[in-house]
Every structure is written in structure tokens, then in C-alpha cells.
Image 1 (cartoon, rainbow, N blue to C red):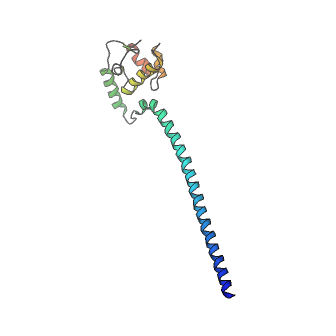
Image 2: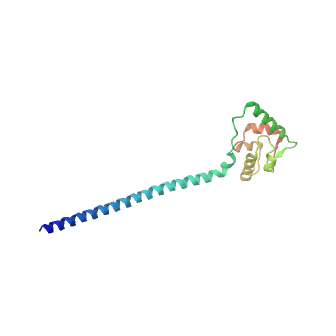
Image 3: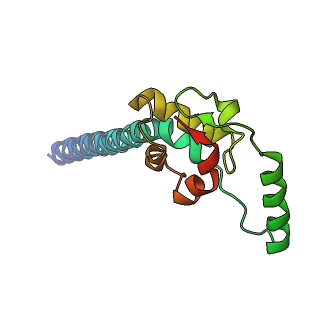
Length: 153
């Protein structure tokens, strides 16, 4: 009889360990599923961010460079007078036909702004007025005022 009680106790103990093992297995599977769900959620968010960056990078490329604000006033006056003298034009530049190199001859226009003007012209058609330049990011009334005598259609 004592032997029977020992066998029953051993059987109950082994069933207990089997139940614990099964619970541990299901627990780890549940944890893995939660991790997979978290990863999928994160991945979806990252892909959405990537799409927004790709969509905005095509228009933002022209405006990545910013001027240095650390120049002293004397240095900036020297550089601006140097740029003004080097960009003296003899004739007007036609905004509807000018290349990026021709547009760079204007005061305050570098390679990126010249490319932005050409891209705007390609997307929206010919300029109807010199003031249409105001629709381009980075070009304001001061630019038009400085270059009024050199701009044509």
C-alpha cells in the first residue's frame, strides 16, 4: 500500500511538472507573439516616415544649404561688394529661356536657386511676370529689387 501511495505521489508530481512545462512554453510563445506585434507596429511607422521623407526630399534638396551667420559685418560687406562687381550684366536675362548658368549671373543666385527657378518654370510653364519669382522658396522682394534691371521675360 505504501508503494501505491508513492507511485500515485510520483505520478501527481510528474503531471505537475508537465503542466508547469506546458505553461512555460505557452507563456514564451505569447511573449514572442507580443514582440512580433510590437516589431510590426514599429516597422509600419518607420516605413511611413521613410515615405514622407522620400516625398519631401525631392523639393527640399535645393534648400539644404544655409548661409553662415558668423561673418562679421565688414567681411559680409566685402563679400557682397565682391559678388556684386563680379555679377555685373550687360543685358537682361530672359527668365523663360535662361539656363542655370545664365541665372547664376544674377545677384544672390547660386546653383541651387538657379535650379529651383528652372524647376519652377518646367513645372508651372513660362513666367508671366517677374513677380512670379516670389512663388519660389528663397526668393523674395529684395532679390527682385536688386535684379530688376537685369530681369526680363
